[in-house]
Amino acid sequence: LPVYAPYIAGTPGLDGEVHANDGTAIEARAAVIAALHDIKGRSDGQKVLGGVVELGGLTLGAGLYTSTTAMQLTSGDLILDARGNSDAVFIFRMPTTLSTSADRKVILAGGANPNNIHWSAGTAATFAARCTMQ
Image (cartoon, rainbow, N blue to C red; front, side, top):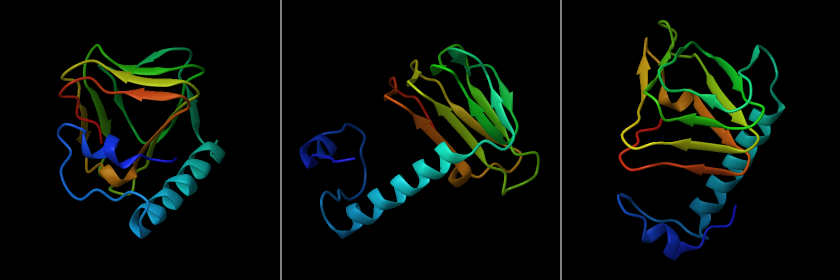
């Protein structure tokens, strides 16, 4: 997961400090790699949603959601409902791409915690303008 600092610094809408190749960046990289290995190793309660999965317009409870190809958020917003459990975990895993259209949102409901929402795209993630992901 190497990152070239000018690409980060030139990102429109980026707020906060840029850490590239320093201690904070190295720790963050290690945490991301550990989380990705954890996500890829999970299978308990897996819900296979099929080929290219449209998440727009769905309301989903906690769980591990996988696709055999790609996931997209293009035809509506996605609601993640923790049903009162702030420890609920949502994992979205796809072997290829995650993409959105403009103005799409992931809406948290029922006490869903943004720290418990994990996205793992195998090849690329593309977010259109004004898209809000958790």
